[in-house]
Length: 371
Image (tube, rainbow, N blue to C red; front, side, top):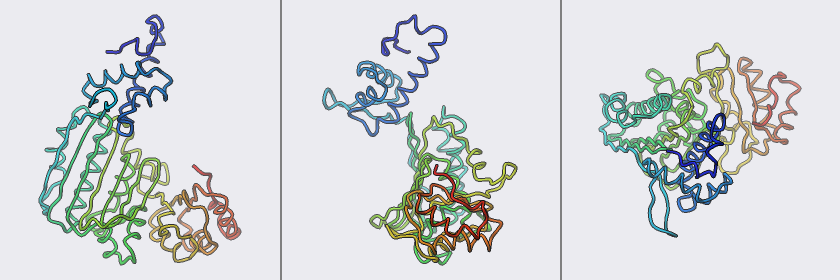
């Protein structure tokens, strides 16, 4: 039940076209509270009031409604008071990894019953992501045990799969003969990567990482993350030992649809295949090293011939060297004219360096605007 006084609006103003606007504003305020309470457990009232330009008592009424609706918890009193999302459902399963472990059965019997009320589009994403990740564990991990966890609140859904196997980055490095486990992360970011092409297309991790709000892999001493803003992080951590830990997060109110994610990576409107990819160029380098060599460029270009269009995202890259640019934007297009390279988020120095090799390359391979 809405409390009209919370927004200090006279009831006469809520008639006609004002009512939908009021309801939308109430929805926006409540969604904001749920979305930000984790980071503002103690000051969510002040933070919301400042963000929406309303009074703290007005925000408190929204907070109380969320508590009454069973979506928010309050702890402590007065100055020690803080808020938290209420867990609506949670699950932890320990599974023996055997060839007979069926990921669809685990989803259908153990996870799906806890997600009543979640919109169909989000359910589809969760089913796809979970079954792809558990299937990878069964077929590739070489482990004995997997632990599956799921937690759900009004603003968060988190599914995690942990195994005690060889580790995904080490597995890819060994199977593909790569020099370093960090190269495995670069290859994963491109898509169409699998160590078992007879059973897998290599698309599962790529599309799962794009479908969820946040996608994270921790294995060995490397942590890789991707979010819906297109940001990628590669961090070195303390060695966590054997195995792989995959975490999937999505807002249950998301309007994202899995088919839209698939369509985004089809190069043509009538192309139903995975023919376009987007690669974060920054993953090629180690630490803060400069991108200057042909060997770095060749590492970036590996397996591009599997796609019709490759978007090279230069976000976070301030400069590149002449040899690096020449290998990508002159040498490679001459050898692979069927692959369309699209530079994106290029800064001035990067654009200038690409321009130095532009005389001998197709005019379509020019820096695109930053997005």
